[in-house]
Length: 296
Image (cartoon, rainbow, N blue to C red):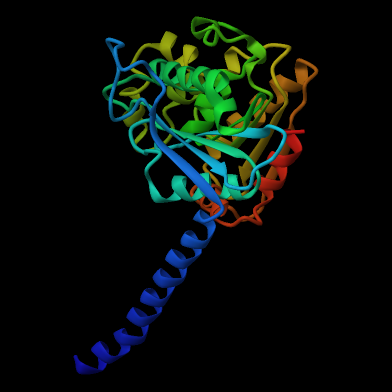
């Protein structure tokens, strides 16, 4: 037993050293930005205002510019029932967006079972409306908002940028409110197909946020709403992600192609689903380079 305890000491030391390096890195990155936190994007007097989830953080570079900066609005994933702008990885992404020269907007939204996916999409539309109206105060350009989401957040982002004004018009936004879209291993692009087949263990869990109503499955799937005039899309898929994400991403790609708006479509070899978001911890990630291209 003493032998095994001794073996564990170097491992513990390495973990502590890694934690120190990680915290030091985050502190250094944070110095380049200012975070305005817990901003309510829904009026606090609204009957459905949720004080925990109707909030967003704005990450603004400290270095002043004479011109407005491009904006990235990031929507987190979490199977529609978990996740928050306050999670470590999403705070890290906000800081890195600012370091890259963007004004980063990282949002929370209501989660299942409290809210169904159509309500979550509506929350995201309200956050976008707040951003369009207020982002100039933080040095951001409301005409250059790049929408980005991972996993469930990718599916929600796609619903906001279909070229149809059904969701956005409710909050006074035109179909062109979004300048461009980056989907990072998006989930939920075609839940009508996914929930009809129910091919995988655990699929029944998605009948909570999407209900058992096929009409809701279709309503909540961007594939069936995308129209000509949608903003430019860039789609990144993990080479080792879930088969359902690969297949629905390809169908979404083909639908945009049919509309004459073929997206940039990139498969990152060896990347699993979670790795597609954790890679954003590194400022050298290809996704940041792509955000710069989309913001032009």
